[in-house]
Length: 404
Image (cartoon, rainbow, N blue to C red; front, side, top):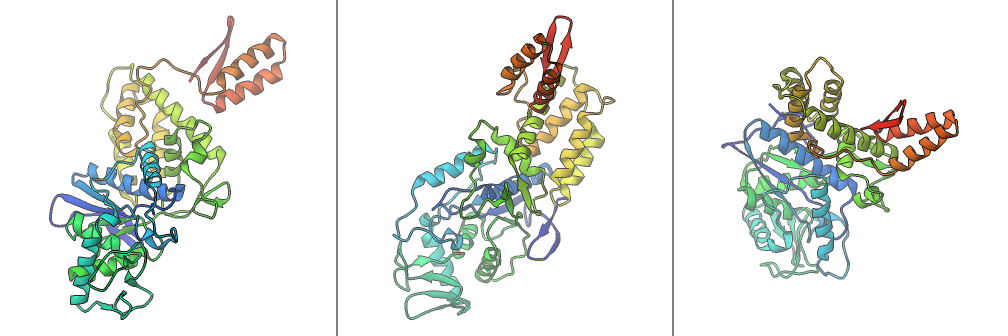
């Protein structure tokens, strides 16, 4: 059974589908008044991994991921009251697809569901859990620091006057509408957001919301926070041709609750691993098929069930790659079996003619020239540089040959 660390309870909790064979998951999407940074995408990758692991255990997963185009989850948005341009939302969706993050069943915009938000606030007032103020605002439990509705722009009509939903109530309303008011797992959201959504949803439903809530740790790139004043976007790290799935792999190499530090070198190392694994899978595909390595597959599953310990799962795959006692056909089946969770498209090179990574051709030509001139020190250095790109060079009587 999948167990995760609930940030509210401060302990491990099981992930279970309550009342049916459907696991309902709510994911706080990034604000749509800006580009999604790598920290946002790490949070959504966490939700994607939860879904993939849970589905291997049997329940169908129905996920709802918000588009925070009204509240911004409390972040300061444009001051002119205009809705955010669609380019931010379009860019975010493209980034999520590039990282092989599955699209949820529901991706509602807050702006298109303000009516449901007003209904939820009305229900809270009727239950005595919210109080309208003279200025047309509404506060949860009469707490002025916790607005459910504020007189602001953009404005919608409401029983309390024109205004706009507060920073948290949009998620409460969307989860109620699209997941039937019963959520089995929450993911994402900034500090404080999860407690507010839990309280609002529980008060509106008349029962405490006990579903676990997952959050990822802080993410840094080259020493700076990816969500800082100068945010780091996916396009920033893939601009030089880096495979986005190498970014996915690099993020998975760190446990989701830990602080993660990415650098240009860690991303290049992940890209080398990804190329090597795809090439190995393509090579193994030429061998007779064999059953999966059940022991290794079960060990990986145990790691994933233990608070999504993907780094341990990757280490186990590395061991399998190097285990010559396991038939190539078995390694092939095991890697593809586990790639359903990892989402690295490890079958991408099957049937393809091997191609050199960018820059490798120039290094091979330079090495040939160095050998022709008898400069063996340069030849050895270039061989090492090629190895870092995932290219193995061998010297033969007729010249050098290479393989991936």
